[in-house]
Amino acid sequence: MKKENENKKIKKETTLQRVGGFSQQFVGTILIFIALSWGYSIMTSKEKVPTVSLSELAQLVNAREILKIDVEGDKLVATKKDETKVESKKEPSASIIETLKDYGASPVSLASTTITIKEDSGVMVWLKILPIIIPLLFLALMIWWLARGIKGANMQAFSFGQSRAKIIHPDDGKQKVLFKDIAGAKEAKEELSEIVEFLRSPKKFLDIGAVIPKGVLLMGAPGTGKTMLARAVAGEAGVPFFHLSGSEFEEMFVGVGASRVRDLFDMAKKSAPSIIFIDEIDAVGRARSASMGGQGEAREQTLNQILVEMDGFEQTENVIVMAATNRPDVLDVALLRPGRFDRRVTLDLPDRNDREAILGIHAKGKPLAEDVNLKTVAERTPGFSGADLYSLMNESAILAAREERKKVAQFDLIRAIEKVMLGPERKSHVLSLHEKKITAYHEAGHALVASCLPDADPVHKISIIARGRAGGYTLKLPLDERRLMSKSMFLDDIAMSLGGYVAEKETFGDITTGPSNDLQVATAMARAMVTKYGMSTLGPIALESDGMPVYGRGVYGKEYSESFGQKIDDEVKRIMDEAWNRARKIIIDKRDALMAIAEELIRVENIERDEFEKLLLLHGIQPKKKEEILV
Image (cartoon, rainbow, N blue to C red):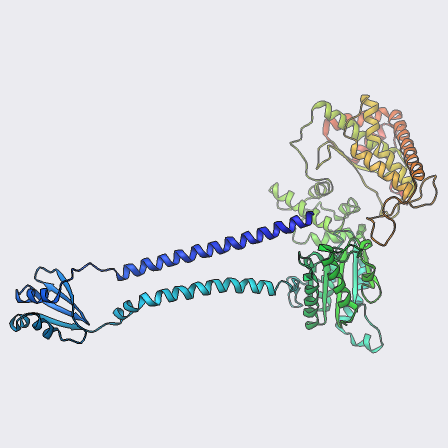
């Protein structure tokens, strides 16, 4: 119903636009006609001359009051002695002298009157035919104007089903990307180098009977460089690169998407060897369902056409289809079968060395101060994607420019990390003294619990300055790259998340809305331990899958009974209670350290890692070393 209302609204707006456009054209036409009429009236307007009969004109000639008579065809214009003029008409074939004599003018009087016979000039001829030509010209102009609008609408209708793909030509130096321009992703580059070699010299593959994969699916988290890698394949191979988004196939009309797919492949075949790149293919390649009609039917027709073009009746040679998605789990199984997207390349988040290399690429063109250490920045950015690192370098340059400095310093990069992770500082968000104290104890609780648990990540910074939606934050980062999470790490993270909640309750005897996000994160981790990772007393069993349910894959709704659901809830409650007790024991046993950290936060608002570790040592807590948290 909502979709129908939206379609009606779109049609209504289109109709109004058409009516409005026609009204504007009609008003414009009328104004042009009025202007032409006014101009013609000015051109043809003359001083009004009195008309007299031929007998009266003959009497004036006899009275010697006429100086001259101008004959213009059958029209007579007589000028009197007082410079006034009168007009009269004669028969077209009759002589002026004979006509005046017939009306009583004497030959003597006629002899003293100057008679001039004027031939019709070109201007006079045009003035005579203009009343006929102008309406005809106006009618022709109006027909042309309306025909032009109809022609434009027809052209738009004819181009409606054409592909909207953008093309990057091999000789376009500005948009050309090579593998050397992309840091990291070594395994992905090795996989794609085969595609490049085939496009460069397909003969050696064909001679041995090898068939290069027709489809390459790039899978990875947002910002990992899927689009850049696809462009790099085209740049290395030196072939045309057709790229568009999966949503660009979709329209409100059924069949348009399939038409655009056919047109896209026709364009690519004419330019073969070439590459077609479809970004966010899950927009059009989702698993087909039993529902029909409307937008779903249009999407399925588009998907069917892609399947046929890739490996159906239409055999495509030397055209490689590349696609990118961060949701491979929702794609239709027909897209993933051999002969279509049978080569899948996974792009992971960059590790520390790759992050350092990516930062070096994005640092080009930015003057860096002598104290900049990209290795340190890379160590402080685990989990950052290539897009995040680009944003980090850009934000650091903006910070330096705002402070009227010509070089980017290490301090700018550190601040930019926090801005990218948490958002900008909200300096206008001024806390009261009581709220500032609650926030300080809350963050001190997180930091203290994290420092006392063996498998929690070390704390790098504590702040009670609001950033983004957070009123304060405790920044903890692993010292080493981590691919796996153990059960003990999950339990320590849950206890650390509850540290702020416990610190508020034990210090003030009450709790606020501040720990709400901490509780959500901790509960989600506890439930994942039970239902996904088998890290509970329920044993090695997975009860929930990642992502949304897809038609034909798995069961909708809960995958367990009500009685088993109660066991899950009990197990989650047990994990949360144990984490609460662990955090509470640390807060009570190390109350002096908690108070010292909180008071220092109230005083300076920010505590960096070095200062924080000094506070820990003063209270007998040994800071974590790198070798203690190896996985």
